[in-house]
Length: 348
Image (cartoon, rainbow, N blue to C red; front, side, top):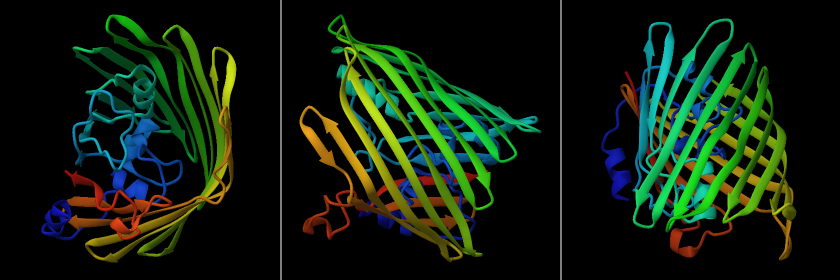
């Protein structure tokens, strides 16, 4: 509540900055970018997108994530930030401490998470926009050491964008023994815009050696995103997606899952300084099959709600509510992450 009061005390006027985990999650998207909604955090999908978000300072409030954490969630938000700027005809970005899904997977497998991430991106624009980025992360403590090195590449031409992240190396050593050695990590995607509609596809595969046992996963999906300007101040968002994923240990399939979610969202500039946004995500079909049997994800419904307040060249976003089946009377039905994910963007 103290964070919310601090934010409310700063109110002034300007246009939204479109640059925060809070905004994306309140619209039902992932914290590291969207395939069809314009936001500066799309840099973590496609480095070529930074040419659309020049001269921004981005700060995300949060706590220090422990070295053994397996996720950066709205309930356990990591402090991070960075900026984009120009150099001649080029755009570059420097970002600190973004906690990626790759690092979370490494922590779950090896018990020690790569931390202190530094990402540098460089992009150019013209007939074809292009971008490339390099990410490094790691830590060293009494329990052991961890490291991660990866690169991102992306191109955009007219309505088509193709991009990907490649894990070059990752390693976790605990008590002098290799707990995890990364072998393959590829995360790729493509989008094609057709007016208000965007068609997208994605593919990811990873293989790690965990305590001498090979563990891998593969996933792919496709979908449609609809971004419609209903009025000058209101946008409606809809995403329909189908995905399939498998996991293997020592060559044997340990789990399979499929999902078909639909997302309905809206964002409106209610006042000159206030944006209100919200979403509803519903599982139309879905099932996970593993050694414990089959678990259905169909019918699960989650919601998000957020605010964006603009003060001159500064925008502050907050995730007001994010929840679903886990909501209880103690949190007034808003989920366990009520009033979380606060981000600040300064356009310089």
